[in-house]
Amino acid sequence: MDVLKIEHLSKKFGEHEVINDLSFSVPEHSVFGFLGQNGAGKTTTMKMILGLLKATSGKITVCGEEVNYGETKTNSFIGYLPDVPEFYNYMTPKEYLKLCGEITGLSNKQIKQKSSELLELVGLTNVNRKIGGFSRGMKQRLGIAQA
Image (tube, rainbow, N blue to C red; front, side, top):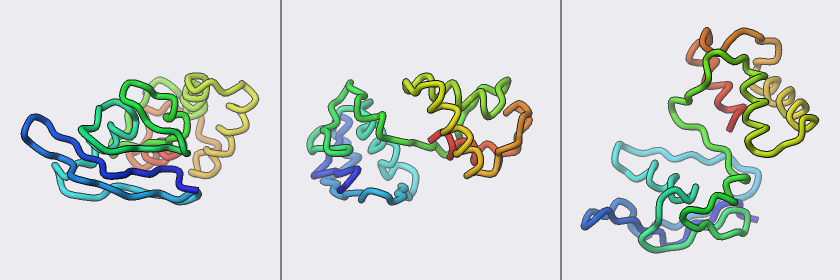
């Protein structure tokens, strides 16, 4: 199954075409990223995938459900890590992941289990200090856990 499928996606801002007939799919259990020079349309494409920007034409499906502009129901299937993630610096990693879990509607049991699993995965298991004191690399690893 494809978790993401983009078919003939295009986006224009006035007369300026940013995305022109983009088509690709991302299979289940894979890692996918966008690479390209500034202005290539990476952020524009992500905003359309997230339903935050209306496509000029084309179709986007996430886990078999069509993405519609202004609706974010498919976002529960998406993890997104921007190149420079932002955090609440006064929180610890566990507090931050707890907040993220609450926002996405996970139960306290699910939050505790998933947070422990993810912090172990990124090597931040026993880090109890505030995120504000983290190195850039530690913030990137926490961003991966959050995504």
